Image (tube, rainbow, N blue to C red; front, side, top):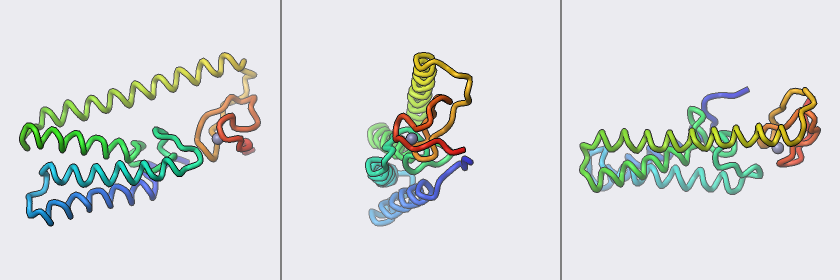
Length: 161
Ligand SMILES: [Zn+2]
């Protein structure tokens, strides 16, 4: 069962946006200034990074390896905010085109990694020899394993069912 965010993801997003507003209010700046993006981005990046480094699965891209929102890991939002904050600090606050380029760039990078990972899984499966049994998703680390594997090859968790 997959939901579009997890509780830690929601908490991190809330804390990040809260930190952004706190920074702009403390500095008496309007919202949407670089300070907002720097504060929110730092909190998101650090919070999700800490959780992911502590998680036994330790996946930096898997939604369930840390906080996620709309299936996107929270640290990606953090990186995005930092980049947008940096762009606004350099180029001024009315840089919608720059924002769009940054968002598109990160989306393309994530898609590229996703496609690379998917093709890797396919070749691993081909190398392992398929028995026709259905692939299964590890309940612990959320990685996919070939159907003929009884234990997760990444964390040794036993297949359920
Ligand atoms: Zn596993």
